[in-house]
Length: 271
Image (cartoon, rainbow, N blue to C red; front, side, top):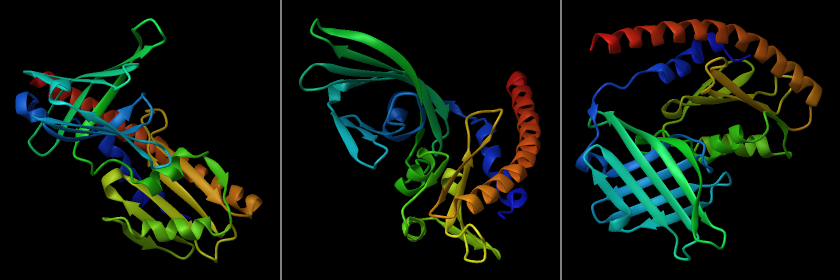
């Protein structure tokens, strides 16, 4: 069984950190940004911004990229406010991002709303507005292997050979860490605070894998996903045992998160 108490608590606490620093303004908006959260689909999006234009890259769940090219006139900065206003060539789609944020030179966050307009034959009409947030750089955006694992059903039967292929693909990711014990081999990617653990042949549910990542749900700060090839009963027993241990970790983590939030609130109030 994965050693949750020594591996996963540290993966969750980062979500409660408060980023201290100055307001992002003017040229500070130029550079590369990737989504931290987005209600607008797809969830993984990248903004590349410069004084001469840029790109708005939307990465679908299958890894396919749809790229919106931004003209210089599509990007406007008014002191501490960034506006990205994209219209497609046919004129029936408009995406308007309005963002502000704060941070240091090396670590910045911007957040705000994306407004979606569609033309249903009578001109562009506002459909809705959805919150989005970005972090500077692309280090924290999940690579395709991790994204596919966690965006599919929580428990899923996969084709024979899929578990081995997934493990082989994880080995190619830059920054991967590998640890193992008697029954499992775990691949950690610290930059996105997520792990996927594979069973060894000594575990009855082999071949199978369980993944763990932080969740934005404060009442359930750790999210899981599982894949197995053919031994459903054995895997579900293994997964249920894992969830029972995870519940204990969740209880302790929620206490730590609450204490950390209270500490950060006190710091903010003192400024």
